[in-house]
Length: 129
Image (cartoon, rainbow, N blue to C red; front, side, top):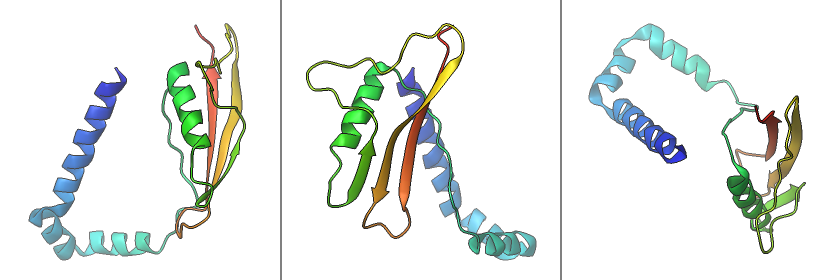
């Protein structure tokens, strides 16, 4: 099921890029004064943060934590809250029938990037029902 979402996301992004590059869209931007003013005002803003949400199972969580632990130490400073697997997959989720839990997964500081200072990764587990 996750592959289907990734495929749809890829199709959507490719279609969006196709529309932006089209001559009709470029002409629209040049001719429409109100839209051009809107874009110019947005260009002055800076993004302080944003959130990306996704769903993970235990296997994907093991893969994600292992990926964080293997980041290049010269380019990233990683503060990992969970240990990566050595031999077999670890179970990072505890069985919950009522309530939910939230935990910090990792903080990754980008040492050489001009635009991204750090990424905070956390997860929330909602009850299994």
